[in-house]
Length: 250
Image 1 (tube, rainbow, N blue to C red):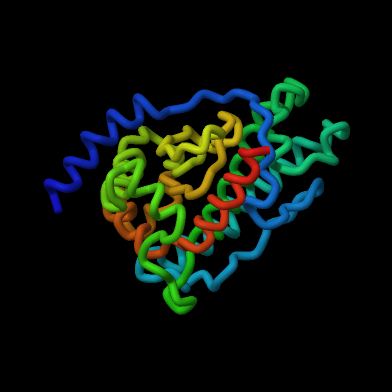
Image 2 (tube, rainbow, N blue to C red):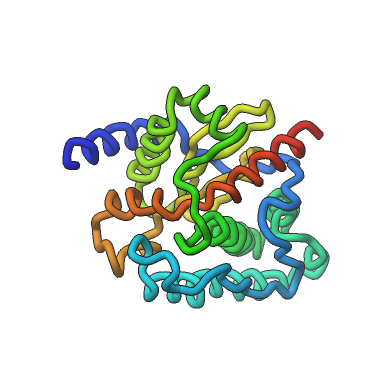
């Protein structure tokens, strides 16, 4: 296990340097990647399962705090920021992310962090599933075939995303995304930046902020990353992939 983690860390440092993205505004249609998150005033969506449903991979206390405190704070802060930007209150979360440059400068950073945090977490919750819901162990269909074709094997893909997650310095996310060319890619984003801002479609996100795992795993991020793979909701990721292909095609 130690050799595997060391390999992930080496790959991760290279991945973080190569895959990190800066925030840009690129018009992409992201409708349907998450459940409908509504418009201002935004509300916290319920978890799609009980807080203890992902144990032992993700413990109930972490899940409850992560959702009811951290995600809720992004929603509250987004609403607060938009109070002084009424011209943007009619926009969906994805539109706020992709039209960030138009948002008033005095609330732009708050909208960047809070809209990104709201959308990222909404993707995260629905990208996971408990074993009780007939969880499937790996992606199938077209997504599985494309991952094998582009990464060489499903194990190689998992290693690439794991390496990116371990190499993400500080707080942020590791992602599987679809480019508008139709190509799959692993990337990372800092803080709560969204892949949508880089003009790509997020299919699977792994939260590597310490609040996502520290209560249970402490400083063992590698153990958390390994456990993550046991609760991925592959049918949902496959649905997002099929939708993103259609959206990318226009």
